[in-house]
Length: 340
Image (tube, rainbow, N blue to C red; front, side):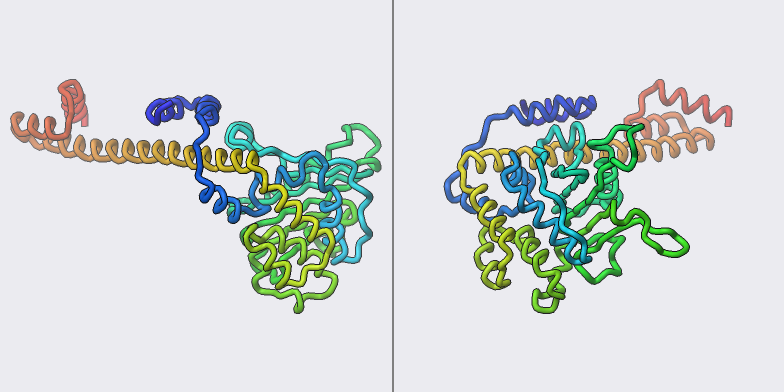
């Protein structure tokens, strides 16, 4: 389908059909050099890398280790073993057509863990993070059941940007809990916690300047933060020793080695670029229409003023021809001038 046809579909608000047509387009062939460069610049924060690394319960122990590294900071007990994880396969239809629930949901005994990895800055993300963990409160639990059996929920948000709501916090990881407003006393803090990890804030720290209880989390976050091509150097420079972090590095490297994975990843990147191009064209068209409408309104105001001031009809006709105003619209302006 050509650009004009796709833009027509967008104008008709048939978004699902637009996305379906983009996805059906034939795969572009890439050179080995292009594939290698794309592979080197991938990182775990990429949706496809994240999905393939954690899908099919392949690395549940790493999610456990990440959660326990967060809890270790606040001297909390380790979580029970994760029984299964569900990972979102972030396609265009998922994201633009029907929305997303969360990147990963881990289920343990009486415990749900949500994990969101958001690379690009997103307005209102703090609300999204809280909503995601709130939705997980209802999983494995039906309304009307014994509320003491509702699962605990741990929400983990790994962000490639700084969160405005945490601008005053120096540490790269912040734990959010409920509390009584007047006393500040924790309220169900042992049952519901949300963690926001701001990867850019790691640049203000080094492993040696952090308290030891942060070291496991630091090691794992380094893997999330690093491009594939820099992984081995970062592991050496940061003296990463945490077994889960090293397993995660190997899992990510294994993930991106497959040719089928790279074909699908590059195809999806191409789809994203096309979506941005199509909607960019649509926005530009809308802006041009608004500009034309404003310009036409200004010209009509000038003609209306001319009519009211008795400007000769031949001059008014020249003004109409220049402005592209048809005779029926001129007659409407004359009536409007008479009633003013």
